[in-house]
Length: 214
Ligand SMILES: [Zn+2]
View (tube, rainbow, N blue to C red):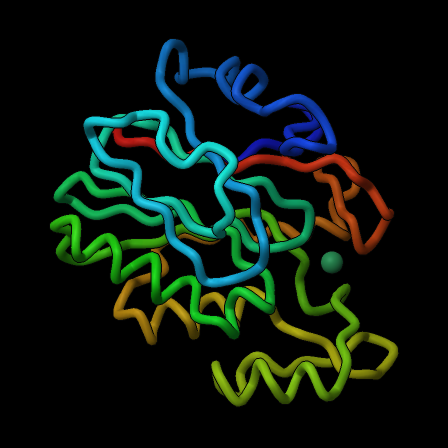
């Protein structure tokens, strides 16, 4: 699930209290252990083992994977929250900003799921900033395109380079051999009534994506 303004601020510590209490209140999560990371825009993947359901909490990293019942949470404002699942019961949650995508966080998360026994991995993309709102430096855009292809290049409505973050996520998933099966197709910058956006409104609040094995 992806939260929005309705569920309130789910930012991680130290900006506010550890999100376990707030995330744990979300519908469907009653009593379920939750793990989350100190997100650092890298390619670090943390595996939550079945025997240690609270593993990971607050560690540095940008992707969580597990085959246990632990709910995995990532917090975003404009970065892409990517949910991963396989029919073998392995799930993953990825915080994918442009630096993490260049570092290969999506591929690393999918690889970690395969090591846990996942076969085909399916992905869903939550609300994130879209190309029409994502002014981007030309040099940084070259970096992302070198890694993920020219499809990530876009332009602002008024001209100027822009990053197509959903396209970058799609390209990373393709490289990982995973399939994007659902995209909520919402821009956090445009949909100010429903989502927090750091880039568009300078907001410090975060929405959460929470992934768990049903
Ligand atoms: Zn937008």
